[in-house]
Amino acid sequence: MEHDERRVRPIGINPMSPIGQAVGGPSTEPLVYVDGEFVPQHEAKISVFDHGLLYGDGVFEGIRAYNRRIFKLERHVERMFRSAHAIQIEIPHTREEFAGLIKEACRRNAITNGYLRPVVTRGPGDLGLDPRKCKQGPSIIIITVSWDTLYEKELYERGLRLVTAAVRRVPPQSLSPSIKSMNYLNQILARIQGNESGADEVLMLDMQGYVSEASADNVFIVREGKVLTPPTSTNLPGVTRETVLELCAELGYPAQEQLFTLFEVYTADECFITGTAAEIGPVSVVDGRKIGDGRPGKTTTHLMKKYKELVTTTGTPIYE
Ligand code: PMP
Image 1: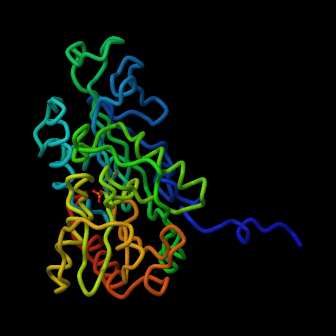
Image 2: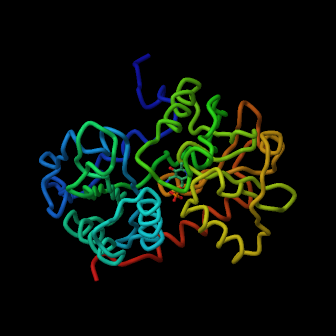
Protein backbone atom coordinates (compact mmCIF):
# COMPACT_ATOMS: atom_id res chain seq x y z
CA MET A 1 0.00 0.00 0.00
CA GLU A 2 1.19 3.46 -0.79
CA HIS A 3 2.34 5.55 2.11
CA ASP A 4 -0.40 8.08 2.82
CA GLU A 5 0.87 10.64 5.27
CA ARG A 6 -2.60 11.95 6.00
CA ARG A 7 -3.71 8.53 7.14
CA VAL A 8 -0.77 7.56 9.30
CA ARG A 9 -0.19 10.91 10.94
CA PRO A 10 -1.74 10.92 14.41
CA ILE A 11 -4.14 13.79 14.96
CA GLY A 12 -2.99 16.60 17.19
CA ILE A 13 -1.73 20.14 16.78
CA ASN A 14 -2.92 21.30 13.39
CA PRO A 15 0.16 20.87 11.16
CA MET A 16 -1.27 23.24 8.56
CA SER A 17 -1.31 26.16 10.93
CA PRO A 18 1.27 26.07 13.69
CA ILE A 19 1.23 29.49 15.34
CA GLY A 20 3.56 31.71 13.37
CA GLN A 21 2.86 30.32 9.96
CA ALA A 22 0.35 32.36 8.08
CA VAL A 23 -2.69 30.66 6.60
CA GLY A 24 -4.24 32.69 3.83
CA GLY A 25 -2.90 36.02 5.04
CA PRO A 26 -1.57 38.80 2.82
CA SER A 27 0.75 37.57 0.09
CA THR A 28 3.31 40.26 0.89
CA GLU A 29 5.77 39.73 3.70
CA PRO A 30 4.22 40.35 7.14
CA LEU A 31 5.23 43.50 8.99
CA VAL A 32 6.43 43.31 12.57
CA TYR A 33 6.41 46.25 14.97
CA VAL A 34 9.82 46.70 16.61
CA ASP A 35 10.64 49.73 18.74
CA GLY A 36 8.46 52.26 17.01
CA GLU A 37 8.65 50.98 13.45
CA PHE A 38 6.86 48.47 11.25
CA VAL A 39 9.48 46.46 9.37
CA PRO A 40 9.28 43.39 7.09
CA GLN A 41 9.46 40.19 9.14
CA HIS A 42 12.98 39.27 7.97
CA GLU A 43 14.30 42.66 9.05
CA ALA A 44 12.68 42.54 12.50
CA LYS A 45 15.61 42.27 14.92
CA ILE A 46 16.59 43.10 18.46
CA SER A 47 20.00 43.30 20.11
CA VAL A 48 21.82 40.15 21.29
CA PHE A 49 22.36 42.16 24.50
CA ASP A 50 18.62 42.42 25.08
CA HIS A 51 17.86 41.01 28.51
CA GLY A 52 14.74 39.39 27.12
CA LEU A 53 17.08 37.10 25.18
CA LEU A 54 19.85 36.83 27.77
CA TYR A 55 17.66 36.29 30.84
CA GLY A 56 14.05 35.88 29.79
CA ASP A 57 13.58 39.31 31.37
CA GLY A 58 10.36 40.51 29.83
CA VAL A 59 6.65 39.87 29.46
CA PHE A 60 4.31 38.94 26.63
CA GLU A 61 0.71 38.25 25.64
CA GLY A 62 -1.11 35.91 23.30
CA ILE A 63 -4.25 37.45 21.79
CA ARG A 64 -6.70 36.31 19.10
CA ALA A 65 -8.51 38.17 16.36
CA TYR A 66 -11.75 36.77 15.01
CA ASN A 67 -13.84 38.27 12.21
CA ARG A 68 -11.88 41.54 12.10
CA ARG A 69 -12.19 42.05 15.85
CA ILE A 70 -9.72 41.53 18.69
CA PHE A 71 -11.17 39.39 21.47
CA LYS A 72 -10.78 40.76 25.02
CA LEU A 73 -8.08 43.21 23.93
CA GLU A 74 -8.37 45.35 27.08
CA ARG A 75 -8.05 42.34 29.39
CA HIS A 76 -4.87 41.20 27.64
CA VAL A 77 -3.38 44.70 27.66
CA GLU A 78 -4.25 45.02 31.36
CA ARG A 79 -2.53 41.69 32.16
CA MET A 80 0.51 42.77 30.17
CA PHE A 81 0.80 46.07 32.04
CA ARG A 82 0.37 44.31 35.39
CA SER A 83 3.02 41.72 34.48
CA ALA A 84 5.40 44.52 33.43
CA HIS A 85 4.69 46.54 36.59
CA ALA A 86 5.40 43.50 38.78
CA ILE A 87 8.90 43.17 37.31
CA GLN A 88 9.48 46.94 37.27
CA ILE A 89 9.38 47.41 33.53
CA GLU A 90 7.74 50.68 32.65
CA ILE A 91 5.99 50.44 29.30
CA PRO A 92 6.43 53.86 27.64
CA HIS A 93 2.79 53.95 26.49
CA THR A 94 -0.62 54.23 28.03
CA ARG A 95 -2.83 51.15 27.90
CA GLU A 96 -4.91 52.88 25.21
CA GLU A 97 -1.82 53.65 23.12
CA PHE A 98 -0.62 50.07 23.44
CA ALA A 99 -4.01 48.70 22.40
CA GLY A 100 -3.87 51.14 19.46
CA LEU A 101 -0.47 49.76 18.41
CA ILE A 102 -1.83 46.21 18.45
CA LYS A 103 -4.78 47.31 16.29
CA GLU A 104 -2.42 49.11 13.91
CA ALA A 105 -0.25 45.98 13.63
CA CYS A 106 -3.39 44.04 12.63
CA ARG A 107 -4.37 46.67 10.07
CA ARG A 108 -0.91 46.74 8.49
CA ASN A 109 -1.08 42.97 8.06
CA ALA A 110 -4.71 42.82 6.89
CA ILE A 111 -5.62 40.50 9.78
CA THR A 112 -9.13 39.03 9.76
CA ASN A 113 -8.53 35.97 11.93
CA GLY A 114 -5.19 35.85 13.64
CA TYR A 115 -2.91 35.36 16.58
CA LEU A 116 -1.21 38.45 18.03
CA ARG A 117 1.94 38.45 20.10
CA PRO A 118 3.01 41.65 21.87
CA VAL A 119 6.33 41.32 23.73
CA VAL A 120 7.96 43.84 26.06
CA THR A 121 11.52 43.07 27.14
CA ARG A 122 13.84 44.83 29.58
CA GLY A 123 15.77 46.06 26.54
CA PRO A 124 19.49 45.96 25.74
CA GLY A 125 21.96 46.01 28.64
CA ASP A 126 25.32 44.42 29.32
CA LEU A 127 26.11 40.80 30.19
CA GLY A 128 25.30 41.30 33.86
CA LEU A 129 21.71 40.63 34.88
CA ASP A 130 21.26 43.92 36.74
CA PRO A 131 18.19 45.54 35.13
CA ARG A 132 19.62 48.99 35.90
CA LYS A 133 22.14 48.40 33.10
CA CYS A 134 19.35 48.39 30.51
CA LYS A 135 19.47 52.14 30.12
CA GLN A 136 17.87 52.32 26.71
CA GLY A 137 14.55 51.10 28.09
CA PRO A 138 12.19 48.34 27.02
CA SER A 139 12.11 46.77 23.57
CA ILE A 140 8.57 46.53 22.23
CA ILE A 141 7.65 43.95 19.62
CA ILE A 142 4.27 43.14 18.11
CA ILE A 143 3.98 40.11 15.83
CA THR A 144 0.72 39.24 14.09
CA VAL A 145 -0.07 36.14 12.04
CA SER A 146 -3.17 35.13 10.12
CA TRP A 147 -4.22 31.98 11.90
CA ASP A 148 -7.30 29.95 12.68
CA THR A 149 -6.95 26.90 14.91
CA LEU A 150 -4.50 25.22 17.28
CA TYR A 151 -5.81 21.66 17.22
CA GLU A 152 -7.43 19.86 14.33
CA LYS A 153 -11.22 19.82 14.29
CA GLU A 154 -11.20 16.09 14.90
CA LEU A 155 -9.42 16.61 18.20
CA TYR A 156 -12.12 18.96 19.46
CA GLU A 157 -14.66 16.27 18.61
CA ARG A 158 -12.70 13.35 20.07
CA GLY A 159 -11.16 15.14 23.07
CA LEU A 160 -7.57 15.76 24.11
CA ARG A 161 -5.28 13.25 25.77
CA LEU A 162 -3.32 14.66 28.71
CA VAL A 163 -0.53 13.31 30.86
CA THR A 164 0.68 14.70 34.17
CA ALA A 165 4.16 16.21 34.16
CA ALA A 166 6.84 15.00 36.54
CA VAL A 167 8.03 18.58 37.07
CA ARG A 168 5.86 20.71 39.34
CA ARG A 169 4.62 24.18 38.44
CA VAL A 170 7.08 26.77 39.80
CA PRO A 171 5.59 27.86 43.14
CA PRO A 172 4.37 31.41 43.76
CA GLN A 173 6.95 31.62 46.57
CA SER A 174 9.58 31.66 43.79
CA LEU A 175 7.84 33.37 40.88
CA SER A 176 4.29 34.63 40.68
CA PRO A 177 2.37 32.71 38.00
CA SER A 178 0.40 35.93 37.41
CA ILE A 179 3.48 37.36 35.69
CA LYS A 180 3.26 36.23 32.08
CA SER A 181 7.01 36.36 31.69
CA MET A 182 9.30 35.36 28.86
CA ASN A 183 10.61 32.47 30.94
CA TYR A 184 8.57 29.39 30.07
CA LEU A 185 11.19 26.69 30.77
CA ASN A 186 9.06 25.18 33.54
CA GLN A 187 6.21 24.61 31.10
CA ILE A 188 8.55 23.61 28.26
CA LEU A 189 10.06 20.85 30.44
CA ALA A 190 6.52 19.62 31.06
CA ARG A 191 5.70 19.82 27.36
CA ILE A 192 8.82 17.80 26.43
CA GLN A 193 7.54 15.03 28.66
CA GLY A 194 4.10 15.31 27.08
CA ASN A 195 5.61 15.04 23.62
CA GLU A 196 7.53 11.91 24.65
CA SER A 197 4.26 10.25 25.60
CA GLY A 198 2.29 11.52 22.60
CA ALA A 199 -0.03 13.69 24.70
CA ASP A 200 -1.87 16.75 23.34
CA GLU A 201 -1.27 18.84 26.49
CA VAL A 202 0.31 18.33 29.91
CA LEU A 203 -1.23 18.71 33.35
CA MET A 204 0.96 20.32 35.99
CA LEU A 205 0.63 19.95 39.75
CA ASP A 206 1.55 22.55 42.34
CA MET A 207 4.13 21.86 45.06
CA GLN A 208 1.38 20.49 47.35
CA GLY A 209 0.21 18.01 44.73
CA TYR A 210 -2.97 19.86 43.75
CA VAL A 211 -3.74 20.32 40.07
CA SER A 212 -2.44 23.74 38.96
CA GLU A 213 -2.86 24.18 35.20
CA ALA A 214 -1.70 22.80 31.87
CA SER A 215 1.51 23.91 30.16
CA ALA A 216 -0.22 26.76 28.30
CA ASP A 217 -3.84 26.43 29.45
CA ASN A 218 -5.99 26.56 32.55
CA VAL A 219 -7.85 23.45 33.69
CA PHE A 220 -11.48 22.84 34.60
CA ILE A 221 -13.41 19.78 35.76
CA VAL A 222 -17.14 19.17 36.09
CA ARG A 223 -18.20 17.07 39.09
CA GLU A 224 -21.72 16.49 40.33
CA GLY A 225 -23.07 19.43 38.36
CA LYS A 226 -20.37 21.88 39.51
CA VAL A 227 -17.77 23.48 37.27
CA LEU A 228 -14.47 23.70 39.18
CA THR A 229 -11.13 25.34 38.45
CA PRO A 230 -8.16 25.84 40.79
CA PRO A 231 -7.66 29.32 42.31
CA THR A 232 -5.02 31.37 40.48
CA SER A 233 -2.49 31.35 43.33
CA THR A 234 -0.43 28.76 41.42
CA ASN A 235 -1.48 29.38 37.81
CA LEU A 236 -1.86 32.13 35.24
CA PRO A 237 -5.13 34.08 35.53
CA GLY A 238 -6.24 33.17 32.02
CA VAL A 239 -8.45 35.49 30.02
CA THR A 240 -10.24 32.44 28.62
CA ARG A 241 -10.65 31.03 32.15
CA GLU A 242 -12.21 34.34 33.23
CA THR A 243 -14.49 34.28 30.17
CA VAL A 244 -15.60 30.70 30.89
CA LEU A 245 -16.45 31.62 34.50
CA GLU A 246 -18.55 34.53 33.16
CA LEU A 247 -20.25 32.19 30.67
CA CYS A 248 -21.05 29.70 33.47
CA ALA A 249 -22.71 32.47 35.49
CA GLU A 250 -24.71 33.54 32.45
CA LEU A 251 -25.78 30.01 31.53
CA GLY A 252 -26.62 29.01 35.10
CA TYR A 253 -23.85 26.46 35.65
CA PRO A 254 -22.69 26.62 39.27
CA ALA A 255 -18.95 27.35 39.05
CA GLN A 256 -16.31 27.93 41.68
CA GLU A 257 -12.60 28.11 42.28
CA GLN A 258 -11.52 25.07 44.27
CA LEU A 259 -8.36 23.05 44.83
CA PHE A 260 -8.56 19.50 43.54
CA THR A 261 -6.27 16.52 43.12
CA LEU A 262 -5.60 14.12 40.27
CA PHE A 263 -8.10 11.67 41.85
CA GLU A 264 -10.82 14.27 41.30
CA VAL A 265 -9.73 14.72 37.69
CA TYR A 266 -9.65 10.98 36.99
CA THR A 267 -13.15 10.54 38.46
CA ALA A 268 -14.64 13.79 37.08
CA ASP A 269 -17.69 13.74 34.82
CA GLU A 270 -15.98 16.13 32.44
CA CYS A 271 -12.66 17.92 32.06
CA PHE A 272 -11.54 20.70 29.74
CA ILE A 273 -8.67 23.13 29.25
CA THR A 274 -8.93 26.81 28.35
CA GLY A 275 -6.53 29.16 26.61
CA THR A 276 -6.46 31.86 23.97
CA ALA A 277 -4.87 29.50 21.43
CA ALA A 278 -6.66 26.26 22.39
CA GLU A 279 -9.96 28.03 23.23
CA ILE A 280 -12.00 25.40 25.15
CA GLY A 281 -10.44 21.99 24.60
CA PRO A 282 -12.39 18.98 25.83
CA VAL A 283 -10.25 16.39 27.63
CA SER A 284 -11.11 12.74 27.13
CA VAL A 285 -8.17 10.95 28.75
CA VAL A 286 -5.78 11.89 31.59
CA ASP A 287 -2.84 9.58 32.38
CA GLY A 288 -4.63 6.76 30.58
CA ARG A 289 -7.85 7.20 32.62
CA LYS A 290 -11.00 7.85 30.63
CA ILE A 291 -12.80 10.99 31.82
CA GLY A 292 -16.56 10.43 32.08
CA ASP A 293 -17.53 8.33 29.09
CA GLY A 294 -14.30 9.29 27.29
CA ARG A 295 -15.99 11.82 25.01
CA PRO A 296 -16.43 15.61 25.29
CA GLY A 297 -19.04 16.18 28.01
CA LYS A 298 -22.39 17.97 27.73
CA THR A 299 -21.43 21.04 29.76
CA THR A 300 -18.09 21.30 27.94
CA THR A 301 -19.74 21.06 24.53
CA HIS A 302 -22.29 23.71 25.49
CA LEU A 303 -19.56 26.05 26.76
CA MET A 304 -17.52 25.46 23.57
CA LYS A 305 -20.49 26.49 21.45
CA LYS A 306 -21.19 29.61 23.52
CA TYR A 307 -17.51 30.55 23.57
CA LYS A 308 -17.34 30.28 19.78
CA GLU A 309 -20.38 32.54 19.51
CA LEU A 310 -18.82 35.08 21.87
CA VAL A 311 -15.41 35.26 20.16
CA THR A 312 -16.93 35.62 16.72
CA THR A 313 -19.44 38.33 17.65
CA THR A 314 -17.66 40.53 20.21
CA GLY A 315 -14.31 42.30 20.56
CA THR A 316 -12.55 45.49 19.57
CA PRO A 317 -13.06 46.26 15.87
CA ILE A 318 -9.74 46.44 14.00
CA TYR A 319 -10.91 48.48 11.03
CA GLU A 320 -13.10 51.19 12.60
N1 PMP B 1 -1.61 29.18 31.63
C1 PMP B 1 -0.46 29.45 30.98
C2 PMP B 1 0.82 29.05 31.60
C3 PMP B 1 -0.49 30.08 29.71
O1 PMP B 1 0.64 30.34 29.07
C4 PMP B 1 -1.74 30.42 29.15
C5 PMP B 1 -1.79 31.07 27.80
N2 PMP B 1 -1.62 32.46 27.89
C6 PMP B 1 -2.91 30.14 29.89
C7 PMP B 1 -2.80 29.51 31.12
C8 PMP B 1 -4.26 30.55 29.35
O2 PMP B 1 -4.38 31.94 29.42
P1 PMP B 1 -5.30 32.74 28.38
O3 PMP B 1 -6.66 32.16 28.49
O4 PMP B 1 -5.24 34.15 28.84
O5 PMP B 1 -4.71 32.54 27.04
